[in-house]
Length: 447
Image 1 (cartoon, helix red, strand yellow):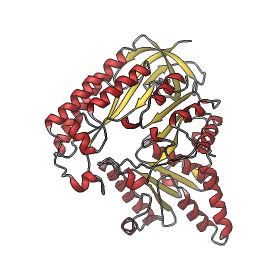
Image 2: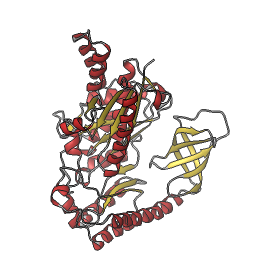
Image 3: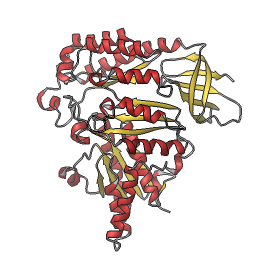
C-alpha cells in the first residue's frame, strides 16, 4: 500500500485545495498515511501572506530535506502560494530535494509526475488518465478522502480564484494570479457531491467572494449563486467569505436575510480605522464608509455576526492612527477580529515603496491591545446568550470529555455534554447555553 501525507498551512482556500488533491491521490490508489513517517508522498501546501506562515513552511521544508536524504525514493511536493502561478527558478534551485512544484489549486503536476514515475512506458495513455482525473476535479466530482468520510460536516468550496484588487500589502495577486470565477455548474456539482457524502454546511470561498460572476457572461452574481446552492437537498447551512466593503451589495444582504439556509454571518475586513492608513493600503473606502456598512448590515440582517481583519503596524502608522483603529473596534463591537502584525511581502507596493518603520515590539504591543479589547467585546456579546437556546450544527465529539462540539448560525463555538449513545454528528441540536466565554460557550441539549 502506498501512503500520502499533506501538511496544510494558511487559509481556507488551502484547506479546500488540499482536500481536492487528496481526492485525486486516492483515485490513483494512495491512502492517507496513519503516521507522517510512513508516507511515500509528502505534500506541503504553503501560505506566504504573513512572514510567520512562510517561516513555518521553510521549517517544514528543512525537515523534509533530511527525510529525502535518508529516503531518496520518497516524493516531496511543494504546493500553494510559495510556488505561485509560475514556479520561480530561484525556488527550484534552492530546493533540489523537492521533486515537483504545484501552483495553488492545481494538482495536475503531481498527478503527471506520479503517472510518469509509475508508468514510464504508458506515454500518451498515462497522460490521458492523469488528465481525466484533473477534469473530474474541475467538474466538481470531489470524493471526500477516506479518513474524513462520515466525519466531514462542513466543507469549503472555492468560487473565485485569484485576485485583481491589489491592496498595497497583499501578495495574493502575485501568487494566485488574476481574479477568475469558477463556472456555476462546477460549483453546484461540487456542492451536490459533498451533500451526497454527508456534508451539511458549505462555505463559498473567494479572495473577494462578492465579486463572483463579474467575469462571467451569464449574469450570475454571488447572491444568485447562493440561491442556487440553497436549492440543493442535504445542505443545511451556507456561508461565504471573504467579502470586501466596496463590493457588498444590497442584493447580497437581502439574499442573506431572505434565505433560511444562509447563515447570519458576514466576514468583511476593515484592516485599519484611520483614513490615511486605509488610503496607503489602497483599500478604496474610509472608516466612516465602513461604519455605515456595518450599520447597514445590522439593519438588513437581524442577529447578524460580523467578523473583520485588522493589520497593525502598517508602514507609517502612528500611535494616533492606531488609536483610531482601536476606537473603531471598540465602537463597532464586532463578533470577531483577526488581528495580524504587518510584515512586508515581496513585490507588493508597501514592500517596494514604504519603509517598514514600526518596530516589532510596538507592532506586538498594538496587536495585544486589540486582542485584549476584542476579548472583552466578544465576552460581553456571548454573555447575552446565557440562558438562551441556540441552534448548533454538531461537527464532532470530544471523546475524552464526552461532549459534542459545533457552531451556531453566527459561527460561535459551542460545546455540550451528552452522556447518551446517539450519534449527533451532522445534526442540528437545540442547546441551552449555561456558560459563556470570549472564545466558546457551554450548554446542555434541549430535547
